Amino acid sequence: KQKTAYEIRNCDWSSDVCSSDLVELGSPSAMAGSDLAPIIGGLQSEQGDRYLSGLARHGFLEAIRFAKLFELILPQQGTFLDIGANIGLYARIMAELRPKARILAFEPSPSCYPWLCQNTAACPSIETHREAISDQEGSRELISTHAFLAGSYLSTTPAAIHGIPKPPDEPSQTSVSTATTRALNELIEQWRPSFIKMDIEGHEYATLAAATKLESHDHILFVECNSWSLN
Image (tube, rainbow, N blue to C red; front, side, top):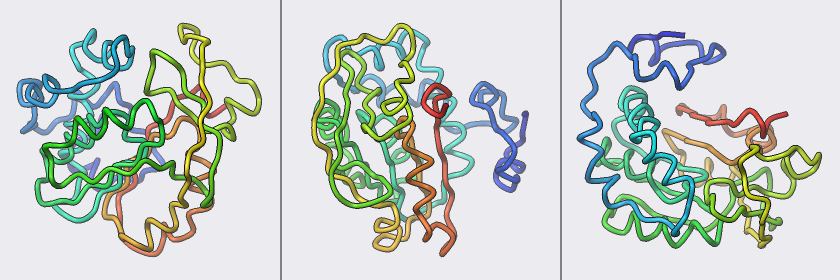
C-alpha cells in the first residue's frame, strides 16, 4: 500500500507496507543514494559474498528504500536493537540517521561477525554482540551457507525442521556452528529499547511469541521476513 510519512508513523501495522512501495514515499528524504555513498563505499565482506554483490548489482536500491523508511519511523534517540545485523549495513544507516541513539547489533554467524565489527568500528554508538536472539537463553546449532553470509539460520527454524528449500540459486554447501542464544525478553528488560529491527531468517515467530515483555513499554518493532522462511 502507498502510505504517506504521516500514515506510516501512525498506521495500523496489521496492514502491509511493502518494500517495493517504500521508494515512492511521499515525504522528501534527507538520505538519498548519494548520502549512503560513504557507508556503502566502506562496506567490507567476505570475498564472493552474494549478499553484498547483490546489493551492489541493483544499485543498493534496497538500502536506499530502508533508509527512507528508517528516516520516518526511527525515534530521535534511545536504544535500538539490530537483531540479525549481518555485516552492519543497517546498523550504520541507523547510526547515521540518529547519532544520539545507542545501537546494539546482534549477529551469531562466525563468518559475518568479524565483518560486522570491522564495518562498525568507526561508529562509537554501535555495540556489537555475537549472539542469536531467540525465545530462550542457551545454545543452538546455526546453519550457515557459504557465499551468502546473510542466509544463516538456526536449526530450529521451519526451513531446517521441515526441509523447506532455500532460494533456488542458493549454494548447497553449508557449515554448522554453535550459537549462543539470548531471549528477547531479557534484552527488553535490560535495555528497554525504543526501536527493534529483526531479520532472523525464519525464527521471528518463535522469538516474538515468547517475548511477553514487548507490550510492557512503548517501542517500534520492524520485522523483515523472507516468504520461504515462514512457510
